[in-house]
Structure formats: C-alpha cells, structure tokens
Length: 128
Figure 1 (cartoon, one colour):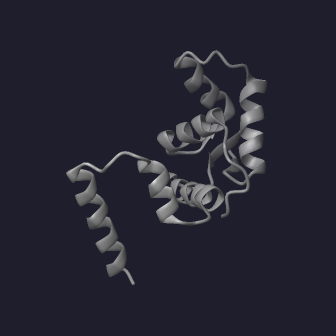
Figure 2 (figure 1 turned 90 degrees about the vertical axis):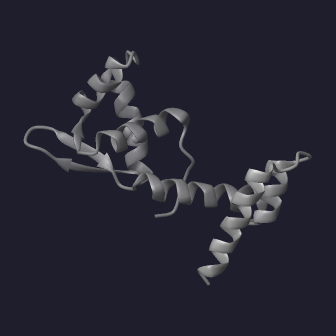
C-alpha cells in the first residue's frame, strides 16, 4: 500500500489505538476507549476520523453481529516504514546523506551514535 496522504496527529492516534487493541472493534467500543482516556468525543467526531482512515486505505471494516467492526489495514511496522520512506523521498530526494546531514546539522555524533550508525551501514551492506 502506498501512503496516499499523511495522517494528522489525531488520525494517527486512532490508528495507534486500533493497533494497541489488536482485534476488530465497533465504533461505540472504540469511542468508549477514547473517552475513558479523557477525550470526551462524540460519535460524529470519531466517525469522521474513521471515515478518513477508511477512505485513505488505512482501515478495513467488517460486519459484526450487529455493528461494523474496524481494524487496521496496515500494521504499525509497515506504516512506519512507508511513512519514513515518504519523508525521505519528499524532503530529502530519497538521499540518506541529505537526511543525515539535516538530522545531525552542525552537531557531531556521540561515539555511541557513530558506532550504531556504522553497525547499521554494515548490516545494510550485508543484505545486498
């Protein structure tokens, strides 16, 4: 699946909650979960976010015994990989070097960061 749009913070929060729950859930039960955490949403608010996620291809819906049940159409790792690739391509022309230069800026890497980065590069080279 390609990332057609970036998620807003709240859309990502909804998707994260669905990953956390791990099983298909009704809109009412999902609303209860958010409201237990102090969100104080109404049904139309949650429905708006679910509709956006559904239209963008991030959610699947199935018919339960009485209600529609919502579940993620993409797992967290796949979303993070695709999202990271989107940012890399969009902001840094797909260049890891440009990304790392922007990330590090004028700062230098700590010895631990340098060691981690070198190990990652070696691991990537061994995949070829």
